Length: 249
Image: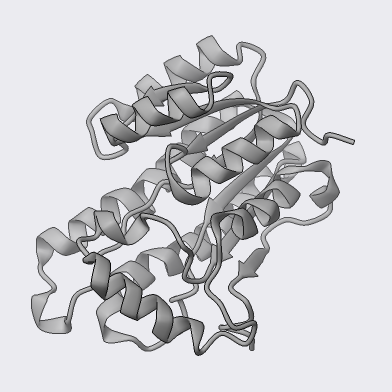
């Protein structure tokens, strides 16, 4: 039975990769979805691929982006949202010598500042008993020098989710994190990693994954839907890893 019939769900970064696949599965289970994106090409293609979705441009780093998002939510779901997936993200991996202030600021703006401010602002638009989901990274806890900045921001998300879970508990709002490992998507395109470099990187990681492959967007989307559904009513402040066992403790 569909779990999201007539439920209103926001997915940021919903025009590509994990976000887009999550939106597709939400639609298939009866949800009404509001998607945000940054790339005009991705926005246009998503509108073609998902004519039943509401797709808007919203650059999380732009001045007024949160106010614009709140206005769009009020038009989309005047009675409030049932679920929020703060999925938009950015990752560029650099050797230690190449890390500079601009690199730090870009990751901070997209991966930590924006979701925290969105989580704060969207509280008034999320119904009591609703679901809030953030996206983590399997790089957290590792020691790779090239992911230092990105991993630091995602470690912040892990902590933010716990604090948000406590804050929203009185309204029975569940706050959790879904944490992908390496996933077949265009995530690394935005960070500047070339096609051949991505191919080699994915082959290397696949050889380290106990289940023998990198993830697919649908793998993560299925976990996201679980955490956005009533099946997760007694789960909050938790991180669900979807990485084929790569980071098992």
